[in-house]
Length: 450
Image (tube, rainbow, N blue to C red; front, side, top):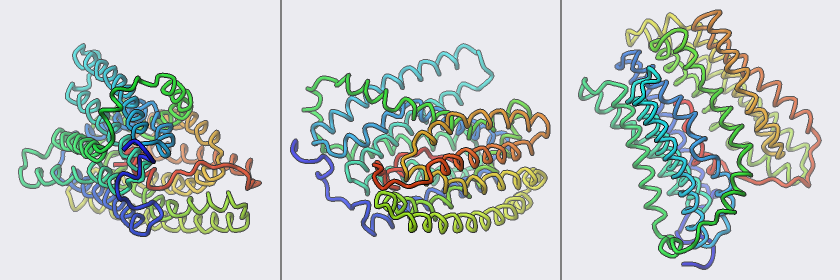
């Protein structure tokens, strides 16, 4: 068990196999479908205040998600690829020690906040945020490790459990038992899904030599080096995530929890625009961009970029138009007049997210050319136009201000990433790119936009 690569202990599919790619696409689609089902269910059956509470908890979980892991998975996912089973087990054990310490601190802070009455946030919501964030962080990390160990199928199973499977009892219980149509039941099912995916990931890693790894000393220098490497990525990712979800907290401050419910439902559908463009177009494009960049195929590289940009523009426009008509109509069908009365807000959000979906082409150009500074620095700055824009526009225009804020923050990304694309327009075939497959990203990224 201690010789060879850790990833060779199970018979697996590779990232490049057609079956693996098809399975990955099916998992991504199931995750998106489950989000749509959950949004429709909440839109019809849950009070707007409960939808707003769910939206606030979800936003807080996403903000806490990256901080909990310190982005240390950025280091582990690469180092573990060529490790022996014993070294892999030791790395996972050391990562668990680091994460566990961080989890204890966050849990202690949550306990103090919930018992000291320093905030009006209900204690159950604080408990949900802490529990779900810990389960999501742990399961996501182990899913990324499974992918790095070339165990893609098991990584997809873990992702399916934490992204999709838990929606079945959340919706099923509410349909069968009206008393279960509450935010607390939905959040409890989400927490259960996170815990189940964590247990499944642990089961899939059971064959590693854990008893031998336990006898090894913790590699503190490796942990310290890893934290230093991931620090800037942590800051950038956290800033970007806070910027993306801060809108619902701004709405809570100015307009109240029911207005947050409206924004949560709108976001559940509107964010699907970006997810569809990413999964339907760009996830298949950027591996080719990496390959063409490394091979110095300049003409083919930019032809691929142009095709992807056109496909993203058209697909995003079709989805935006469909959502712009369907969601207000859903409000009429579900007797939720708020969804129809605030349709201007939805349309503005869709315009901003359509722009953001097209800016993702810039993102993958920078990624393929290894212009990482432009990405993490842009994420660090992103919180400024996002938070500032949302506060200003909601204060001036009320709920439609969220739409204006979405457009403003997307324009920032357009100009920032566009400038970096122009800055590095000359492709160098000698550049070294650390390739992360789409399957790795799928298994490790937060479940944004639910």
